[in-house]
Length: 219
Image (tube, rainbow, N blue to C red; front, top):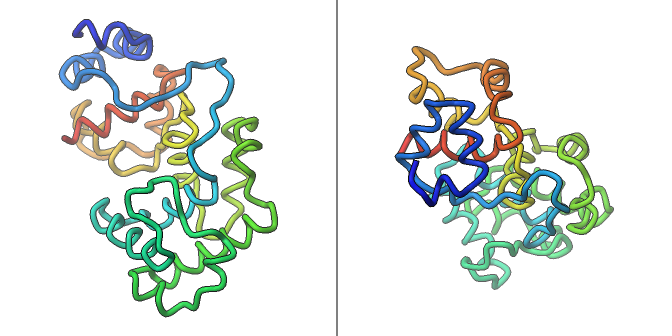
């Protein structure tokens, strides 16, 4: 492992408990995923949970390039810049918009319904504020948000990893994570989510970082 990577306690732990993952870490280099150390006070996310969830809905089951185009078109309806990553149309503004321009931007009927549901939930207080969500533990966030239409566990896990910097999230249903595991560990088939979670117990408390490297394995 190179010196910059070995200085990161996440990487030192993962390399110690999993030699094969350690070799991948040495090849890829330092981790670009920012996470908070276990026990550190939770961070306030950039933007609102509503905005992050809405963006994740748009990205569901699409390539990043196509999803980014659709997201940019939706933002343009409201005069928002595509480069403003943490910004999404305000809930009241979105609910006041007819279906036609949003569908023309590329939103499917199901995704539009899910995003409208998120807007309603944000206005009613069902979606926690950024200040409140920072005080909640991971499973409490998953339980509260997966009760919303169109929001599954994977979507909430992306929120936990990329917006709340939670260190110990393993998105076991994610195709890229499973495919990276299959490649790295030379499996004939994709691991089931249960198999991946069982194996990943050794990576605690840095499973978010392990998942990031499994994505990199496909690069």
